[in-house]
Image (cartoon, rainbow, N blue to C red):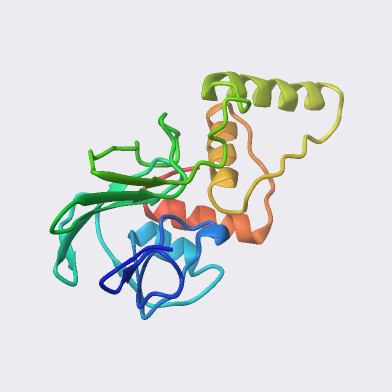
Length: 195
């Protein structure tokens, strides 16, 4: 928990920052700071009063100047930079160091203090590159279809599912998806991501 003069990055503060629209990052407060895509995608699951800002737009939280920067994790995912009197702080939830097709490219800001989610921060986690993962995905789909089977892909309803839809679309495939994935995809389309 971090509270500096009433500004918190946890759910008990009056002012909360929500980095993106995955349910494990949902917050509550009198108002929630986020981007517009995060607000609309979050409203698929919960309500709440959101105050939205564009990336790079300056705003104040109390006496402190703040800005949002893209985190690259999914559409609308953000980091928040706050300049306090004595130090600067950058908080981010999930972040991607590489560009994906359905999110803004991450942009980093130097800060005195960095708070970052590190779910896969240990060296034992070694994932394929996005290009390698995409190649494996398409190989799986083509192999299943060549065998007369229906390839089934599982993904988070918001974020990962839309990235899969975009990759499939680029390779000439369409997909049947549950209504919650379709609703999220319509929000992505509203922000310029076509499937």
